[in-house]
Image (cartoon, rainbow, N blue to C red; front, side, top):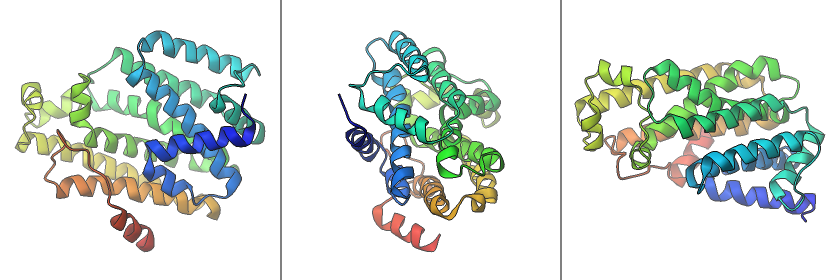
Amino acid sequence: MYDVKEAYQYCEKVIAHHSKTFYKAFSMLPKDERKAVWAVYAFCRTVDDIVDEGENPAAELAGFKREFEHFLSGVYDVSNPMWVALHDVFRRYEMDEQHFRELIKGQEMDLTTNRYETMNELLNYCYHVASTVGLMLLPILAPRKVAVLKDGAISLGLAMQITNILRDIGEDLERNRIYLPEDVMEDHGLRKESLWSERVDAPFVEVWEDLARQAEGFYQEAFQTMNEYPLYSRIPVKSAAYLYREIITVIRSKQHRVFHEKHFVADKTKQQLLVNM
């Protein structure tokens, strides 16, 4: 059995291990908000790990879905630190349970779909697995501005998830997943065979840049309302957005080599970005 303090410490370790970018950005939050973000991240990570690493992901995800509904009714496993911390978050903040359900639905898509025919289909997926996270966090980061910031949070999620897709093309291929939409590939003459051959040729770069431009457009949409965040969360949110957007710049500087390398923003570059933000 975990007490609340220990539960939050566990959640912090999860985000510190799995996402140095988010950990660095959101460590700037005040203590209570920071801990709440850790707990939400641990929930999202748990769902993600079930899908990517579970022995029987469909059954495990269905079980997790039931666990979440029980949690909402006040019944949860007190020996699981994620649920203990999340219970405290739901007690302190006006959380919208629907966004948590939508995230689980997005992860279910990865169990049934490994190709996307159109950009609109991909954006629907990106909304469910990423925009929902921003929407979950709004009651913590900007409780009085949830309605005003909703569209910007959705755009930022879309931007970040497309960035993930552009960074992880090689890794996703290993899992037999192609997130590059078929209509965009057709527009630029990129064939699946070429993708499986891992060739960084002109059609590949054109497809990659097409999606990168769309991501950059979503970042710009998100930035338009970012000053509506209260000061305590504005800097962390803006930092996360700047650091994530920089991944696109890094990959360009590496000539779009994403098949055998996973690119990150160097610590020195992160410091420069945050100083000049």
